[in-house]
Length: 100
Image (cartoon, rainbow, N blue to C red; front, side, top):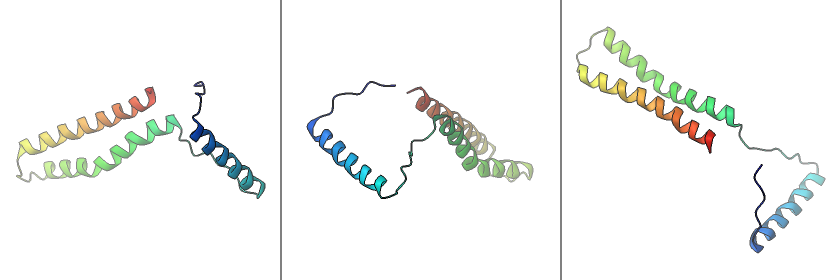
């Protein structure tokens, strides 16, 4: 775990006020819940959401491709290339989060 740095006077004051409010709320029966996200979950959910968002467009591409709507072959090839790079860069983005 990272070593604790020295807090400034303003940060010490804010921490003191936070700890006081925290203690008061806990004594009144409130439950403290940590809301820090799980790294593994973020690295799985992020690319999954990217795939879910891009899936309708991928399906649309193949539907138009199967029924041979003449919208321009080059357009769809470029679009699919963009979607592949989009998904790859989403995964890379999430991996950078995991590294840092």
